[in-house]
Length: 349
Image: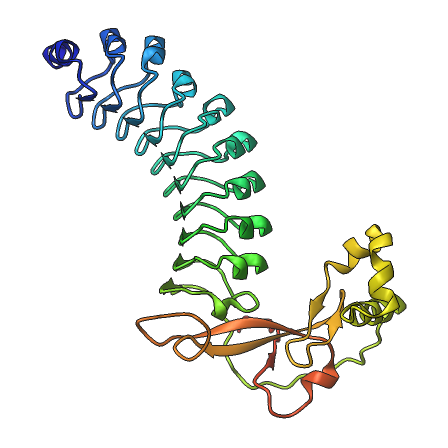
């Protein structure tokens, strides 16, 4: 190992490979290789890094995969030229916020660790494109991840996630999203805005249906086996009398009037920002296209991915997609393919 470092020092090398050398402690003399841009230390028994490595200010790639780190070395937070950081297969439980100040980081691999949460400071990784945390104990994705607008790939497979942040739609460059083998009950409704998403893996979760207009995504690959999707099974139902509140009736009227640029309502709304913010939460009936605010009828329709939207799937799949109708009046009209969603308790024999 010492010979490798000495040779690199005399040759003024820009890369050094000390992988699989049974190293427990990185020699401090590595810090003298100030021209290094790539340092490979994977497949060793490293438990810490010497602070002297702060001198490696030209380092762009560091691989510490498959070692014995129990925490992310603090010195990494000072290597501001880093673009690729691999920390997979260690024993890391916490990611300190100090490490989240790497302004040029593009790839962060934390696979196969024991991390439960990410710090909010992750939003500082403004150039991050690939985030991989496969096989951890992550219970929540901080909303700050959604500020990473250059993300093109996220891998959160095999964690303990029950939800994804609704603001995920801000990641406009996202092309691949892997969230298989978690505890997801639903996907964010805003996922429809991910116009570049090509690969989605949600296998092994607890999904019952896909979000509204999901089938309009430009997916090329979709993996969804092992979920709890609703099925099209005829069963008796009772339609409750629908009585809209005054707030709902007025909101629907205002939303409808606001569609006309020549209407008085459309002209006056900008002067009432609180009302505008409230109405921004409204939606549109999947059948009549009429507006609603907080009262709707949840439905589902079964969509063949080969026949609709921009999806270019290799195989034909039929999936349940959520849809919202404004009233039973719309639901009871003929000629549509929307079904009501029923919940049914299973009794033990």
